Image (cartoon, rainbow, N blue to C red; front, top):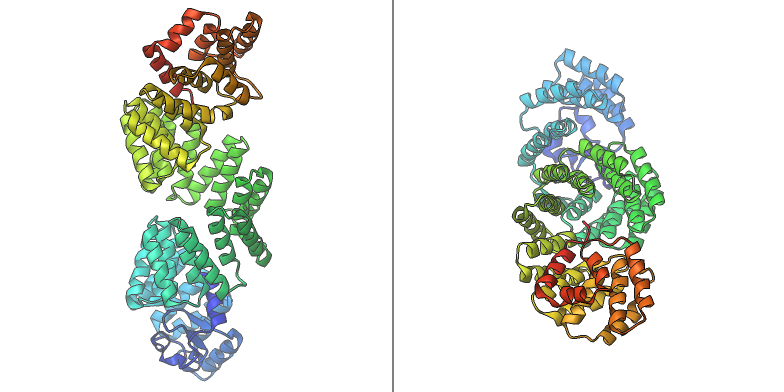
Length: 582
């Protein structure tokens, strides 16, 4: 069971009155005097002994008085104290006397679990359950062992059997929610976590699991509220602070998130999650060296944290260390084989390397683990698109956007795919949504302008391109398209020259130089000024349509052909739409 649970329940000391009235205590096979030290939350199954030293004295008095359950009592308290060798000796004496075989098996399970002897613990727990099949505490222990074995479904079955005997057991509900999250059943986890809070509203771990579940379904305000309630209940524990830090980070409250992470670290300098959140904040704010230092600390604290290795992969990607990044993501996928996110990242790395078959395979691995992975479907769509399977790509872009309607890469590439499939109106709608979501997405403005131009709406094309062209400082093609839109929408050469003077880039590119050369030629500038721009553009080795446009600056017939013929204009537009990088 959760170690924090033990501490919290001990602090809260639930159910101080009439502890022997609790059915779990009545059926617990230890000597009667020891039971007076037991506390059990009336809606839970977890037994707490507040004073273990005093309890051990009472258990040994039971042994001395010949109580038939004395050795079992002594073994139980000793294992609670962590004294494995003495507990093992005591349970041996209990077994020799035949003291309650089911209880003896249960305590043996506890002893072997404390000794990290999982096969023996598993065998003992199974023996206890064969004698008392619906014993809630033995079922909870067996679930814990199954979870350690990696058998999450098996663990869930044991917990659900235990819950049939105690439906409002808060610790059982917490464990069930944790298992559901690990199995990707996020919505069920939220419902289970809410039941846990209703069962034990003054216990921090129930609010913590609710916060964790709400983060998983991206309900960050609810997660912040749940973590805040946990802090109010038990402010001295780091978990709630780091959970609130994560929820605040994911809702773009970086300063508050950083303060919460720092508070968690102040409470416990070895709290791995807090360093993980700190690393995410630093990465988001481009403090990559600081982010790497924080995540390395998290990995050092918990080498088996899949989330920490995954985040380390993100940071290494940003640092340009793609081979190391891939290794970190693969380590995360090994630690948690059912988690889809590392596979999404591995797929993205393969996409960036233009290894599209590999990217497709990795994206399918991600989706096989979580069919609700929007980025997984987006990556699979990108890989299919790059391999010429446009209709299949469109299906996966649709799936990605059904899951996350504002996912920018999928909006952009679905629009591009729709355009290539001959559906410009639908593509324009996607670009329109994208510029609402992110007004600084330059290529969305450019591509919508191209589609307006292709479908005969030259004024709308000019408005889009004129709006964004000043920000296209390194790309050549949008400048050519801007000039074409100006011509088609009836802008005069003088108007375009004036506008060009207002937005001239600090670092001209081949496209902007070609446009200025053509405008200067038409305005009657000296040939030397025109050739200066032409030579500068050619030195940049422009390709495709931009190269022809540079040539047109000194060839009036070619310029007229390129800019005046609708078929060629459409060919130019289609060439331009393919120029944006993946």
